Structures are given as structure tokens and as C-alpha cells.
Length: 442
Image (cartoon, rainbow, N blue to C red; front, side):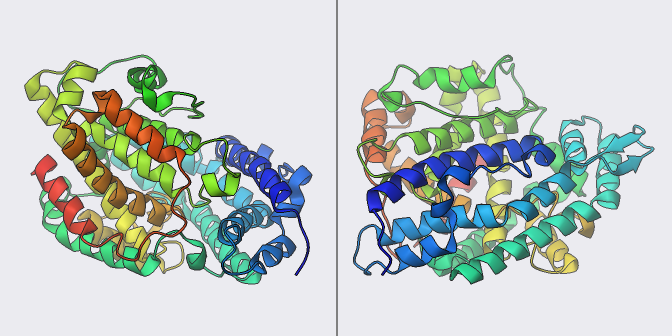
């Protein structure tokens, strides 16, 4: 066995994790500038195959073995795949798509996704979708290549798909994902199908035309302020990153999800070793993101926080539930199949069955995209549904206003995370989440 100081490795993984997160954030803003950044240079030794092999040689019962393997795997994957990840991000950001309609100009795939979501008029939105479909080839091709490269790198490290490094049973998650799709199929057909096509459905999922006067100004302030002086944020420094542009109710959902995830990442106690306090899959952060996004489906929350009338609050809660249903069904599909590793036609068929509308096959992998962490997001949503049920039972429907409930969350999240969830963690999860959706949108 190779000798190394575990506490020094833990310290350097903490530094490397912060650098990797910052680099990925810069990559989303300006891929060309971030492409060659040596974010790992001062901590390279925790991003290597040699270190992965070394920590893998620790005894099976060693409490550091699995968390170290998970973090070194994540960091090594990011470092070794940096060039292909940057090429994929650059292909999405380069303005190589020339359009004459609806507005002449040169666009990137990222530009067009933003314009599709921001466009109010259906005819123009359809034109933007057509333009993206016609010009998305390079972005999809680069994304596919990056995903294939990640799998190849994972195999060389000794963990081809990373499934052995997860805190949950991936087979159990896939079973629950298929169950969720089956149990929400009729809802999807009723609520999504009438939109006819992808452009129409996206307009509905932005949820722009929801009754009531929604707050303007900073989404950051709107999101954080209700919890600032509560036990939830005691001793916590949040790093939310850039907040979404305010387009509709979906923007408020994303803001709450980002707040919950940032809280989930910051909540673990500083006294623990980094790898025991922070899960490399970020399941805990995604779980809290899903929990807090769900607040927007509570009419009482909307009345108090947004100032909507009872009738408007009910309508807005229902629309928020539809957006969450749409996202959950997409994540369930992504947990079953990697859309970047199947044929374009298969991806199109699967997406059309999930979304109940037609969409061009060339959009698969670019809109909707196929993030590698989508299965973790679904797992987080399943766990968050159980959390919300527990909080309602113990602290009532308005648990988010209860100092006792928020202190309970804070204390729970300060403890080390469960290294491996029980195999039955998702038992009944699909039925529970589907029933919740029915109550919100039915």
C-alpha cells in the first residue's frame, strides 16, 4: 500500500473541490477563457489515478476509504476531462448559428436556449426552436464526445460508470424512476400533451402568465431574506452563484432550489473532515434544493411571501407543481438512459413519450440537455418528498416559518451524511411523489 497522510489528503481535497466548483462556474460563463485554466495545479496529487489507486487500497472497513475514493474520482475526472469538457462548453457558447428569422444574426446554442425561454410570442418561439434544431449539431456532437470521454476516463480509473461510488443503490433508483414515469403518465398526457409541440410546452413550463403580482428586483434577496435571521442559517455562509433571470414562476423555483442546494453544501459542521461532511455526489445539496423549491407549491407560502390572493396563490402553486412534474419526469428518464449515449432517434422517442409533445431529434442533448447528475437530482427529489412529509407531520404545513423545524433541519444537516443509504430508501418513493403531484396539480 502506498503511504499518505489522510488528513493532508482531506485538506487538499477541500481545496481542490473549491477550485473545481469555481472552475465549472467560470466554464459556464466563458468556456474559451476557462479551457486552459490550471485550477488543479496546487493540488494535482489528489486528482490522479495514482491517488485513486492508493485510497482504493485502504481496508474495506476503513471509514475514509469510500469518501476519499468518491472525491478523488470526481476530481480526477474533472482534471483529465478538462479539455473535452471545455470543448463541449465552447461549442455551446460559440456563435456559429446564422439565422434570418425571427431576428437575423449570429447565435450560439446557449443564446438560442435563452431566447426560446424568454420569448413570449409562440410563433417567434417556434422559429427560435427551429433555428436551434437546425444549428445544434456541433454542440450535441461535442457534448456526446465529452460524455464518452468521461466514461472512458472512469474506466481507466477503475470505475467505468461511477455506480459503485454512489451513496445510493442505482438499480433501486432506476426501478423507482420507471415507476414514477408510469404513475405520472396520465398527468403528463393531460397537462403537457395539449401544448402540441416543444415550443408550446416550454412556454407553459416557464410559467410566465401566472395570476398575481410577483415581486421584482433581486431574486437573491427575495430567496434568502425569510431565512436570514433563523436557526437555519446560523453560522452558515452561502455561495449561491449567479441567480436566474426572472422570466416566470419557474425562475422563482430555480432560485429556491439554488438557495436550498447552497444551504445544503454549507450546512455541514466545520469540525468534521471534509470528505465525511461533504458528499462528492452532492446528493444532500440536491435534496435540500428540491425541498425548498417545493415551498412554491404551498398556497400559504405564496400568500405570505409573494402577497398573492388566495385564488392566485392556488393557481400559482398548481403551475409550480406542473413545472416540478416536468422536471421530475425528465430526471426520471435521464436516470434510466443517458440521452448522450443513445441514438438521436431513440432519444427523441423517449423524450416525446415523457413530455407528450413532438420535438426535433436534433435537440436531444442540447434542449433539454443531459446533465450527468440528473439521477442524483431525482434521488434528491425522492428523499425531499419524505423530508417534507416528516416536516409537515412534526411541525405543521408552515414548517418553513417554525424556528423549531428550521433548527431541526440545521442540526440534521450539520451531522456527517449517510455514507450509504439503505437499499430500500426509494421503496414507495415513486408512489409518494406521484400522489403529492396529484394533490398539487390534480
